[in-house]
Length: 189
Image (cartoon, rainbow, N blue to C red; front, side, top):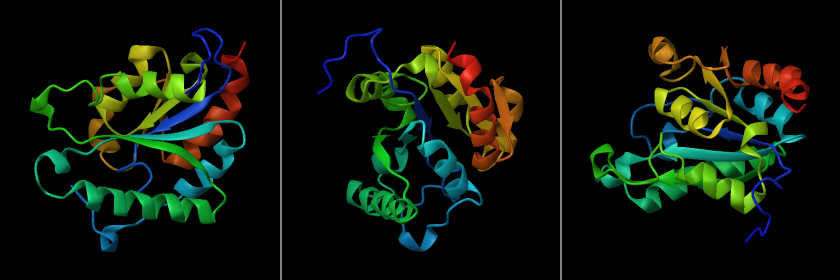
């Protein structure tokens, strides 16, 4: 466990949603035959991996609804991690909420439990970090802790565009990465 005290965190992170941002969102998908990376996602992560810790935070209510099991989720997610590793992209950790919205748990986005845990575990300064997602809950989670937020127009992003006011609207993860790298030094001052 990281013993870094709050205020001493030095690492920057990209806290990214999975479905609709990294992989095509086909609705409660968990089968490997449904696995498809979103175009330009790998290229975007490659650009960001040099300067940022990469962490996935995802709501997976399909587990709580009984549509698939935790084992199914892990199999799908491990496949994603393995595919990214082949491209020299290291995902530090995947935080996932298995609960349904009506369970009112502490880990479901937009609640910030996983952001706080990631900050502690990996020594992350959330004010120097970015949340990338395609839904309102991603945006709200990031804003709730002072992260910069990017709303991608992949997945559900185009449908949720009018529900959010992020720091940046990006066509995809590569567009988001280019914007982050351009703006990063400004935010670090």
